[in-house]
Image 1 (tube, rainbow, N blue to C red):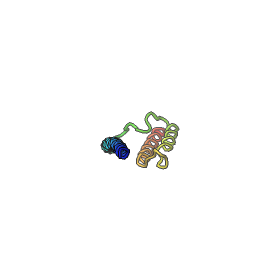
Image 2: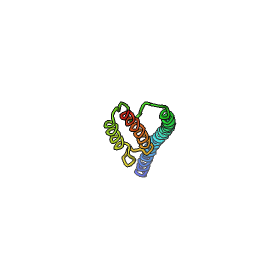
Image 3: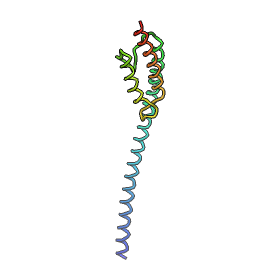
Image 4: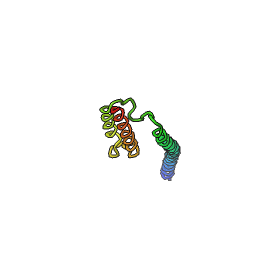
Length: 127
């Protein structure tokens, strides 16, 4: 009978230890999920800010392009057709949609800017 009580007490203590360990693990998981949710919300806010900034940039880029002789975003400092062609090829390698960091809209902006600058440089060379 005494052994039976000792065994039950031992098992009860083990059960309490397991319950305490389980509660600790549960608390760690709760904190982790709360942190994960906070990180997710922060990421969503940053994503929305980035998209809004990108939208503003694309609109301002289009309006700046409409102004005559606007400063080139991708081809800044290019003064010759040869340098323009080299920079264009380098940019295409970087921003082509098949690449990991590629972007179709950026590539279209590069193409438009390239064509405009090429015409400007050719007309300057002819004059």
